[in-house]
Image (cartoon, rainbow over all chains, first blue to last red; front, side):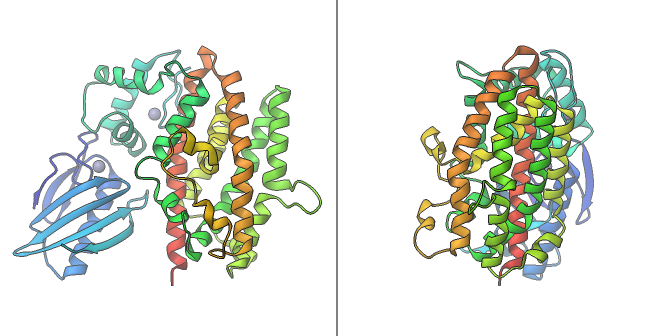
Length: 97
Length: 298
Ligand SMILES: [Zn+2]
Ligand SMILES: [Zn+2]
């Protein structure tokens, strides 16, 4: 998966030392909560779009809420996502344009 | 005593370097509260412990201000910055669901509130602090006298006015963030110095302090116009108005006491760290209100 972050796959932090396999790829995370967030994000995007995999993910924002663009093949999805302190999805919305 | 703002472990006398090393060690172990604290307060980029020191010194430095001013400034930047806390945004013109999320989770908060204040009273020997807490507990829980009911009762009435019976409110277990908050505040009240507990608890009343806008808050806790008009039921107005009126003096007086008794060099950093821990718990707890509100959305 092509990503804009080089640190933690959710928050780009380079603290911590958690590695987890998501979508067949071993990714770096700062903590377990970010792992949960990432898994929930990927599952939700797949559910919303019917895609079987994600080719790219671009994230901006912070813990108050993140604006993301996900892509699979020639399709893409822009969305807003925010999580609970435990890493579950608290709010999700598709964005247009 | 310097203590850790993520776990409150004591780390030695005025020893920010020990704190930097502790934060680095815990982050290396991917401990979420420590990683979070570093990410949000210092840097998301991993650096050797010694390089954290200047940032830590900036966080803990009071500059030319008092402890009260330092607490207010930190509180404002966390909850009332350019992007306010999502619960504050939702409360500007609250939906029925938002108010009910507030009722269900806040019931647990207020019950812990009484315990925390009682611990502070039991552990201090300063008459001023005892009198302050007595007054606070009366307003929040006991009820200030004939015809005037406590904030706790006003909360339950707000729930009833929105169609949720108090028996349902009282039997609903807290969401995880509320439970963690309650446990964290209980630990603070029983284990930290009583001045640190005083700072940790009563700084939270800043959330409803309507004078914060003068100190740089981007918005009020809620848009004051909802107290007139018919946007929300009268019982909700009564609950919100009470906090709007009481919490100015509650938070201001308590923070004056914190400044008076907590500025001693051997106490100050413990007070600061305990406050920092408390506002992280509070940030999560406010999100639990929104999480609960989602259950009431039609
Ligand atoms: Zn992360
Ligand atoms: Zn710690």
